[in-house]
Image (cartoon, rainbow, N blue to C red; front, side, top):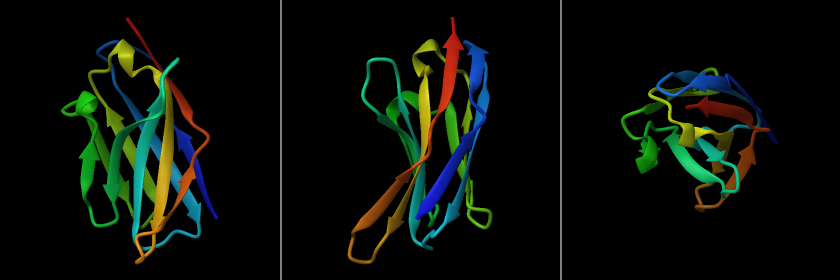
Amino acid sequence: QVQLVESGGGLVQAGGFLRLSCAASGSIFSRNTMGWYRQGPGRQRELVATITSGGGINYADSVKGRFTISRDSAMNMVYLQMNSLKPEDTAVYYCSLDNLFFSNRKESYWGQGTQVTVSS
């Protein structure tokens, strides 16, 4: 089992910034992908950004150039620096971790979510 705990959400004005953090603990594989997803009001959960244990990074088009994902694998932490925030970034942000098996199977884990609200 893996436990994920997010922190850093809050209320910010449009154009502002926030930094989300996620601490992972438990049975974490050396091959894994950590990431951030979000779910806005009345919307489905969507990918924000992911980063692999090898350093590969993927961003949603809507956040490219504004958000930066990073990780500290030694500490099992992942971060999301969010700049130039827009009201449409308002959502519950979830941390995720996928333990990767060599068979291409994966086990996915989620945090409890942290609210980010951007006022106009």
